[in-house]
Amino acid sequence: MERTRRVGQLVVGCLVLSLGVSLLLNARLGSDGFSTFVNGAAMSTGTDFALVNTVMSLALVAVAWAKGLRPGVGTLVQPVVVGLAVSGLLQVLPRPGHLGVRVGEMLVGLVVLAVGVAGYLAADLGVGPAEALPIVFDPPVPFQWTYSALQVITLAGGWALGAS
Image 1 (cartoon, rainbow, N blue to C red):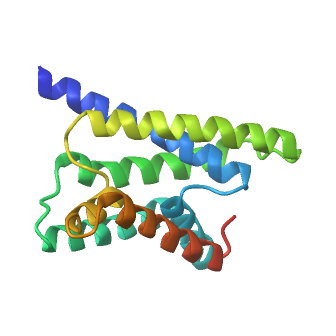
Image 2: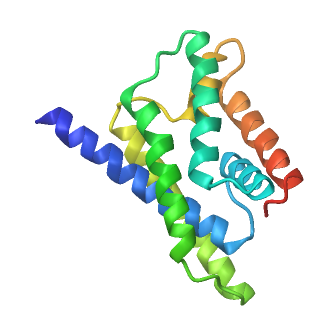
Image 3: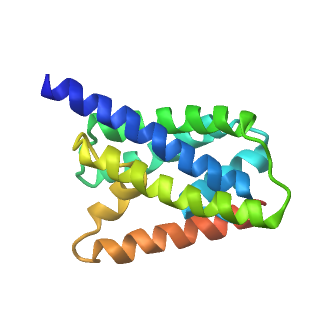
């Protein structure tokens, strides 16, 4: 029963995270680094967000696994659920034009994103792909530095590929 509750929490957390990412991307004012990179790669190649998210996430997980971090169920479920949900939500969310509405959507998206990440991590079924890689380098480099570096590098890559 406990495992079922945790899997449910994982899926709900991933769906909430997906809504947050979708709101950020839809506002076109910026997003977290990893989502910006995935969005830029999807836009520049004409590939669906879900496919790019899954491929990029699995690449991060593979490197982390090769360095000794065995992926959990959540580590493998998160990219698929988030990718599919974001792809679907981006198709149905109305695109705001007015800057004030876009700023509001961005601010709501940040809060929703944080709640979603907290939800899936609290299920304790495995870290997300964007957290897996930085974890394997702590030590010698503290997690906050490697995680921040990953976000900055992927953000710059996403901008270079045409994402907001």
